[in-house]
Length: 303
Image 1: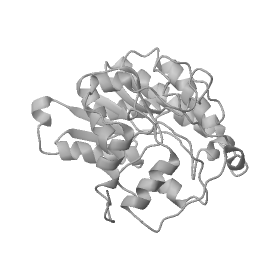
Image 2: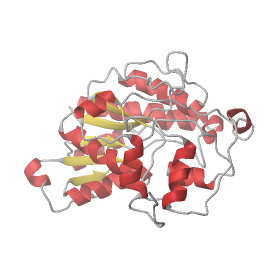
Image 3: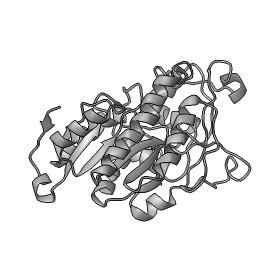
Image 4: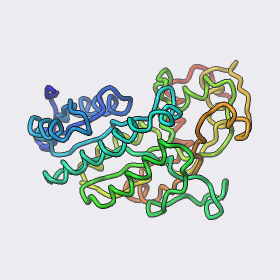
């Protein structure tokens, strides 16, 4: 496995992080954040579903906290999970539960990067109402097998008092070349729907997840910026800040359904709990400009 030790304040703070998901997008970003902050960390080498390997990782790293950014989302997208159900269960359900159980046995907090794509707008949470789903709400979206597994494991993890479940949605970062970035995805689509959604700006929220570990926070958290933003609003920002020649075409959910296997989740999550804990958290549109579009600006913005 190899412990990645870096200079900084980690010795003073006593923090030692064990991170799963080294080859993934969030796991990679998390490691770089730890290195920048001088936090001692290691990447786990074990398979999540292999208890003995996880126990060996923990014995080797002797962590104060464990982070899980591993799992199956599917390549090129979640439609993969529809035809690879056993593999999806193994990683997203069996693996996550095994890691949570091993951590609990050793008195370790597990920060688990989960998903908020387990809800969809309904009569109590209508599109455009500003009424978001709360941490206590029961998932109501079962359109994709991926989301089904994530809802299953979230329900089971409620029984583990050592787990901090972070509901990530449509993650975005300042790296506009990364194919996992929601902005990168929609700029490459032939057509896009235009629906307001809660989203996660990783440049702002990943450092907050480290702070959550320091505070030993647990339970379920809607891990998104407050408010919603639509596909068209993001693409308008992209055009204004990055590429003035950029154009796109919209299509309806009914038209989208013809080119995908599984339906997609669209929702607003209520971020009040996170905002109360971290008052500095920016609304989604402000965060997009500050952390994503302003640093990448290539065109002059006219008032």
